[in-house]
Length: 500
Image (cartoon, rainbow, N blue to C red):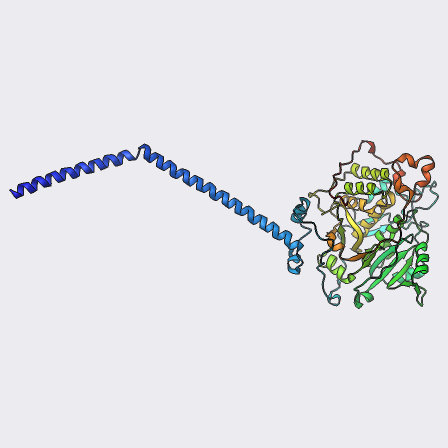
């Protein structure tokens, strides 16, 4: 009886298990397509998609933060006083220029440390000159075929025609250009001075004209540099008479005149009416005054050099294998903005500055932008450091020709000539704060001025106003230009600095 009961219980349990399994199978099969299962899969996919987007967003943010940190580090290294970090910074690189242009770089200090070598005695001099690959032979025009009989004075820079000017920008291996020092034009040196400068291979030059500065003796000059460099002060007779009356001018056994370390070089018969234009002769045409010089450093007369010149050459030329170095302007990169500042500050006749800018605009000069190969079109021209290669000498000649033909504001023509040479002339433009660390600035004894600086319209230069025009400078401003300048519109200028 017990066995029948056990069999009955076993059958019931077995049937119950089969029904349970069948029910589970039916439920499982139905769950594959049930709304609850579909909702669960969609939720999982949504979570994964949201997670991927979050991951992508977080990764983008982290990547931008890394880029920002890298940019901040780059800017910080450029501003750092630590020699290691300042050495790895490339202030001439496109990235730094872009950051500076958009205002990302903080305004530098007026002065900043210059990464110069510490010991002038350990500076190695170059064993050879930098080879010239584009212009290999440069000569100068010394006689004009079409001299103007109407000019009462010989023209120091020559009677340059517009066609000659245009041709001078076409680079060739053999070139012959106007470069000042036309016979009878003035700026002659005595035979004694010519003999002295023949021995000068390394030159520090300055100039005083119209007695509006007094000599400032360089400081921190090593004995090696005193023996290596000629320190030459170019001046006119008015300034020489002033120095004789107000300072100690000694005479050496050969008859040369000295003020401290400076050997005075007198230019007889000033070539121009404007003292400022006269000052451009030794400043720009240093290679013509001192033809034996291999390297030169020009500093304006109002400055006191406070860095050893050998360290300057090592820092700005030899270390980076440059041949021409000049500082960036503190406020302006755009020539048209600099021209606007010249007019506001009455640095020359306003309509003549506009005329020069119209000529440049007509000839294709675009306002400076980051697309240009140079970090600026406007220099601080009071310090010029150069090796006297054929290309550099050609650039100096073409730059001076613009000063001779147009206005004496050399900062307006520098970038134009660089632009016309289309990258063949290489210039190292260094930071303005370093420029201000090379010297101590002293005020002029007096400010010289001429009537033409106050002219507001060309009408003032007609009739009785003819006497205000320069008789030997700016000849191109009064010679008909072979182009329709009336149709030229100058670019609009937006002042980027209140101080400028």
